[in-house]
Amino acid sequence: MKKVLTNLTFWVLVAITAGILVGHYAPGWALQKVMDKPFKGSAMGQHIEIGATLSEFLGGAFISLVKLFINPIIFLTITLGIVSMSNLKKVGRVGAKALLYFEIVTTFALLIGAGVALLVKPGKGVDTHAVKGGDISRYTKAGDDFSWWKFFQDNITLQVLLLALLTGILLSFYEKRDRVIRPLQRVSKYIFKGLHLVMILAPIGAFGGMAYTIGRYGISALLPLAKLMGTVYMTMAVFIFVILWLILRYCRVSIGRYLKYIREELLVVLGTSSSEAALPSLMEKLERMGCSKSVVGLVVPTGYSFNLDGTTIYLSMCMIFLAQVYNVDLSWAQIASIVGILMLTSKGAAGVTGSGFAVLASTLTAIKVIPMEGLALLLGVDRFMSEARAITNFIGNGVATIWIAHNEKEFDPVKMERAFANTDKSEDILHDNLGSNV
Image (cartoon, rainbow, N blue to C red):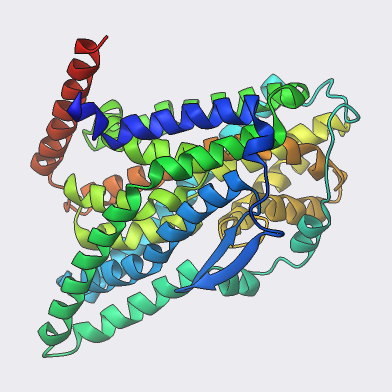
């Protein structure tokens, strides 16, 4: 029993279940205000937003705490990774492979999303009056204002990534770089220790995020859009267990064992609807399972902005969905245009205010065929589909890192087996303890 009570996975599962129950049966408690208005600010280069309701406050506070660690970890990991590489040509080669991989895989994701939406037709027969929308002015404005320069300005992660690359390159030319590297390694060690302490609060964040989602939107109000939600979840499952399975199979990695290995992080992402909440922990686990520190440091942060598999599936499906809702008969040329535009605009989804909605707005503006008002129809279910997006993005970035590390011959299968074996052992202990207490 002691092993169960000290297992983080167990407590996150309990918290998610409790959040669903509280949100459904006591929405008034979950949505009671603790502040007059949401708190918005920034710290250590990360934008922080904590909601005014109790459940929003709990979920937002946890995510904001984790965000404080993201940029320092990215900077230290990339800088130390570049310095540890044998030459700068290798840095360029790994970066080029990563970007090529991202473009190919996200294009597959776009095509799969559009194909399934055309086949299933989730938008046919949806009554636009049956679902309450919301204020879409900030999303349409974000879509009109979209630009790559604004994307870079808003995406602090990319700025830190660029700074880390330059710092790592400069240190590579410094003869006495050990004087700088050793202190950075010590700082990195303490930052990860601090992160481990913060992750103890993951159940609180998961509870708050889930209680707010269920309490705010409810389940019954989403029935008119259930077909879209089901189709999105099904499509992302197909992407994970077919496309990503094939990629991992090439690397001789079991997708089942890999998912079990990162199960705690997946539960945190599920509860908080944010892949940011588990990003630093993913980087640490990928290193532990055999990916080199340099590859992890380059691929994961870059993938956070450019390898959004779940987001691209969601965007392509929503575009086709809205066309079906408004009975817009898209030609094959228009569908190809939508996919082509999304191949570019989806890369900015992580760095634009309003995230996927801003990208949807910019794409709708570009094609000028589907009514912009359709965005309001998606507001009610977006929160419920954000879990699927975040989890798919999260898994996809881990798979990308494994593939590139394997391709660069910087993946250690022995370390992987050791890491997986420890996970299997802890899983067996958890099951034994649960079984003995039934």
